[in-house]
Length: 105
Image 1 (cartoon, helix red, strand yellow):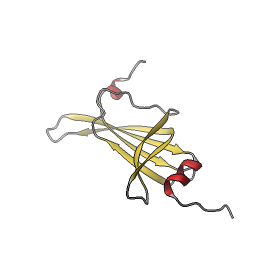
Image 2 (cartoon, one colour):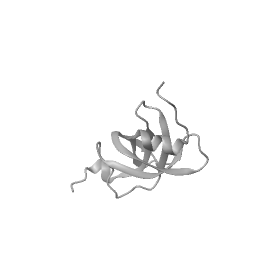
Image 3 (cartoon, one colour):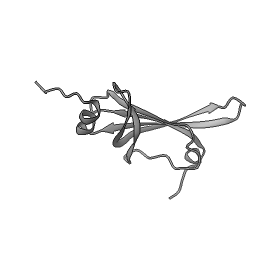
């Protein structure tokens, strides 16, 4: 696999899980991502995330629909790159994690 320079230097990754309507269902933050490839758009991902409306973290999974990179500065002034992944989950995954379901009526 050929890794782009900006991916190889990624310091951390923020993952936001969304349902089909674009609502945030959960979030995860990985502050030490150095040396690992960042999932690409279309890749499947599963990880523990803080689920919206729940006190405990749960496992969420879905497909990456967007990824962005942002250049920031460390406290000492050295540059670091953060990646943001937007992951769309399946409807069944969202219902089971939130514990609440609504009819389509």
